[in-house]
Image (cartoon, rainbow over all chains, first blue to last red; front, side, top):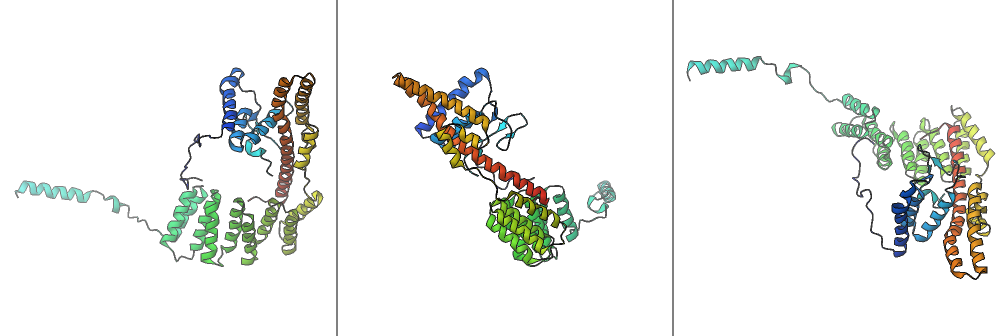
Length: 108
Length: 297
């Protein structure tokens, strides 16, 4: 809507509560290590948006380590040449399949 | 005072008097009338300047609280919020039109758009009640048949397909001569052809993939993902079993440990694929119904 926002934003982008669960920290640390050290060697190869590592990071952070790891394993098995556009996937203008965590929560 | 300064002062006064005064020169005045104020607000709304339009409509209500067009101004405040996708204040404003001005000319449209705003907010029960009020307020209003179409789609969104069909049948019963009657007939036929929306059970998909990895994906129509899940999990299971047979338990634990998330992920993913399939089917039929009715909120 043109004009000032009704409520000023209270949370800034990138700001989040500090992580306290040790199991979750291990998984998040492993994914961050992959993102910073391993992934840049060959560059982006994932056909999805968000990428599998970003998806996994978000899934573990938001859904906990058990469900997050299951969701990440499922995503890794789906990131193949067999993935085709359809009702499950929206194609973005850059050619990536849009598949955020929120679309994989088993909610109809 | 000597003669010279007096002459200078007189001269200065003459020059100042001769200069045109900006406030008087044009001979025009700004007179705010109801028409001017509403015209300005309407212009802002037409340009998509919703916040400015709201300000001007509110100014109108402040300056002319007893105007005959006060209900129109408040209704347009709600419209501006609605068009600006601010559904919470829109619903509040439309409710206020009904509360303050009762059975006026904008009562039925206000109830209709209150229903629309509440629908957008996902408050299906309250939206349904608002749609019900439209026909009660003014059965001859153009919004009365529209409210029935709205209610039918609302029922569909609330996963009540028989309710959706029922509202459309009520439309034909109450407004058989309406221009949309033929479209409504076609939509009822579309719903009858599809019967109940087909479903794939996420639980069945999960169990299938637990027994044979990947089969749940195939059940949900994702054959490629099913083949990949079958190969990945087959290799991990075969590797673990082979290591156990060779009494190489450390390797078995490592291979099995890595493979376990993929096995569980394959069960989760199959259930997820079935859920996505259900969403896709529902969405497709919803689109067909909206197109058939030529109805967009």
